[in-house]
Length: 259
Image 1 (spheres, rainbow, N blue to C red):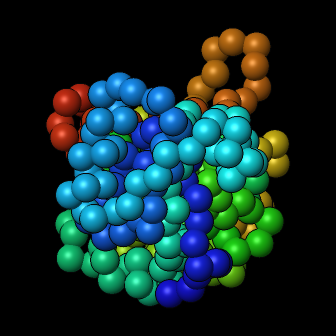
Image 2 (tube, helix red, strand yellow):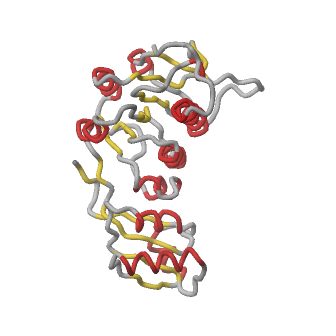
């Protein structure tokens, strides 16, 4: 495992709440805005007391200065820096599962997109996310806030080479599908009920050609309007919930075989 720094800041009511709820994470301290009241604040205070996390109250301008932002919602948590797993470690966590689901983010640089994808992936039942070490955003406070705390529940691995990581996943019996506007198959024409990894490309350029060439297939989301593409987090959400639909049996599954 590796750490980018010894501590990190989480800001926003939901990220702080989820960090306090996460059994594997111990916050060092919580800062709340003086005079802030409400059900969420009471829940933060209750959880902090139960987990023996110190709570301090500060003026809003002090929280602005502490976070470098005015969007902290009056709640800030000081946490150990997010621990990234190695690919081996992530695979070990899912090896005993019948149908693990992973997300591979190929060079997404917008932290809001990464956070939104992590939030949806966790909600849809994914077991992990892979991020490249270069030319991509890491797990910043903005990502944590955009994920609404989901980043505290979903393991994240960093890999040096995404194309090689895709090959490794295939060797571990994953079917790897890239989301691409030029995909040869519609996303609902694929059977996602086995071990699956979905590759989502960066804003604008999409999946890099070398990474795309290593995938078992490229799937597209048909667009009926005049826009030519969807936001990366929206595209990921569409396909993630097709995976979930197939796995829980709430809708018909295409007769098309994997691959």
